[in-house]
Image (tube, rainbow, N blue to C red; front, side, top):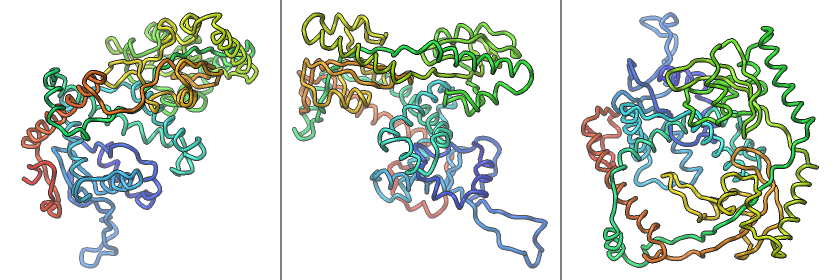
Length: 487
């Protein structure tokens, strides 16, 4: 968002700031790049409405540029929003918040600036998936969508709009950090020496971890419901073809893809690898932007697609997604079948490992149903902390004993589809202080994280020494974490 846009928004909506703060999450605005005259104070003024000797009114301060890092401004409103967010979330800041918060924002801008130089990209699909995960987490934490909307004084749609740019910036920063520390490593000797040098009560505590096997079944969707969805998509195609409306308008009104619907169904330039194979096959074969694709079925539902542009090995398109509804009767039938299967497993007529081969969950069926936990670094493990499991699975296994088979239950999978499932608690490791023999990877991660943190601090200091910084005089006496802000 450009600084001029931010100032305009502030001018018309500064009085609503207190209401919008409850919905603010993540990083503040990235700020402006380019030819902007970033004065210390932004004012509203009207040359035609004032007299040279006796102005009709005094200019009123709308917002204030308190720091400039490179060509990136930090506004006073950015700091106010982050301060209130920290207070609401109970985040403790080191030192004076009036100094710590602007410095935090400034450090983020150093990373964003470097990410732009290094052409770090975040795909539209990553943003969409990340925002949806955030929304799902917030809904669960609040106890339902209505409670969340009431608490934050915003609709889910408004939250999604606000979160997208913030999430994109956070991802760019994280990718930039990952690139910077990619060559930092530690040896087993480093790990042993580090933990010999710290007191026992400083050794990390490993929370309770579980291994879970799962079998899922997709409730059968009635033919009538499939036909209803397909007929709707055909009617949308006909309306666009006849010129009654535009594809983008219909996408905004009816698409069930929350990430792209508000953009008129428009997706960013993406390669084949980030798209569902069936979707990619159709999208990359489109050649005429005036034509609409045939109906495409993916793991997410049914789509129609319209080409916007092709650029090298990437495609930009619009789509409308509709998801067939699962009836209560179909869910009940799936639960009954899984309960029967669970009974057979308990009676040892079949093993859970063998039964998992018939699961509808393609990610686990060939691994005896064992669920995999993927970390941000891409490493996978079969161990989960309870908070890392899908909510419905965690709730089910919480009070189970090792080897126990659950009753069937209903859940929403990572594709947003309603499925039914049974689970087996394969193992449980109670919380404990980490040991070299049992938790070497945990301890290695601790040492590696410390080394990476030290490396990043050194990078920030070096980057800061080469970056233009200007701040209001009132910040010059602050005690900052990094030296070099005051030039």
